[in-house]
Length: 114
Image (cartoon, rainbow, N blue to C red; front, top):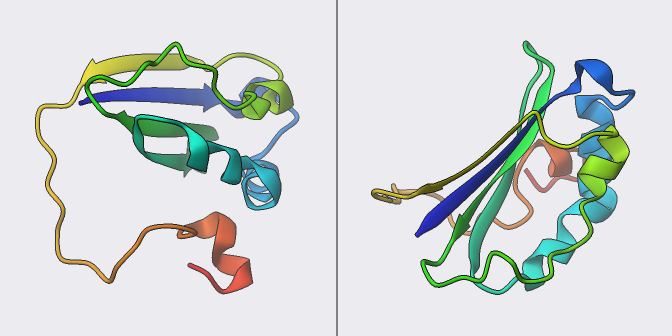
C-alpha cells in the first residue's frame, strides 16, 4: 500500500481553510469516488499554521499515473502543494468506530453530516 500527501501553506493564497472547506462540500469530494485503486482520501487542515492538504491511501498495484479528477485545489489556491510526498505504508489498523467514513468531517458539519 502507498500513501500520497499534498500539503499547502496558504499564506500566499487568497484562499482560506473556510473557502476550501466550502469547495469540498460543493464539488471537491465526489469526483474522487471514482478513482481506481484509491482506498481512501481525506482532507486535512491546520488553522494555527494556515495549512491545507490531503492524504490518499492507494492499493499496492494502483496506477498513480492514471487520469485523476481535475486538481481544483491547486487551481483555487494558485500554486502547487508546498510539500508533496509519496511513501510506503508500513501498517494499518482500524479501531472501534461508529461506521462508514463517507461524508464525515468539518466540510459537511453544517449539513448535519459530521
